[in-house]
Image (cartoon, rainbow, N blue to C red; front, side, top):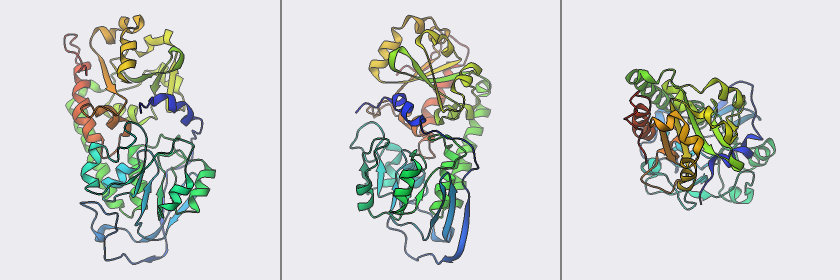
Length: 362
């Protein structure tokens, strides 16, 4: 059940791709009239019918374009984090993709209120192993795969079941910013107005925090995790976890940025742990991994370690009392408020310049 986050990242990045333009949406001819009744998948607080766009709509993406003929009624969240913007837009997906943590979990705490009493089917399909028969049996009328990293072959197969929304080719796979993810899903659901409002609200909170904590501007930061054979992974600037920090004003050290290059992650050897000696060093680890790192003599020599500028985040998703790690992994319009509340105070303690003030040690 323990998900070793960055180990899977190696496989995911083999399909990474860059270039092109962000996804766009255009109305097609002869839009249908909106139904009077709310969709069966509508969640509490769903967008009023008057603000839902007319259909059909056509959305461009890395594999061409997808036309959605009518207001979606049965939506599958095939991407690892796509359920969050779907829920935030007032729609309950009928099925969601298992990612990490408890394999029987149907909702994370930040998703509970949006799901209400309705629970989706959990699709436990490891990366690269889609169960097409199971997906088809759900009889979806829209498959959202923005954060799924699907191949063109998988896209073509899924499109025979229902209109399928892939990610834009403007970003590496698994590197679509939360703003773009929310925006394109809003377009697919006919709820662009609500999507823009959600985006504006989160971006306003980032702006408030940058003003509240000017010391974040230009401070160096790394989000790291142990890898095989004594190596360490770190998030690149195209990774959502690092984007959270850069949105607050933090920067990834130039040498690490060069190592990551166009990928959303990079790796260093254990001998170069000194490259992680930054103003704040965040580890996403299991308890066992943390113990090994803390015993590492090179880690003990880092100024970040000696001055209490290290933050430990649980990566298992098993600890209900420590959800900031999983919430940062999702980095969505639903989970970011939790990250604001829990992680930002720790960041402030890490970079305050006072060695006696340590970041929270969970």
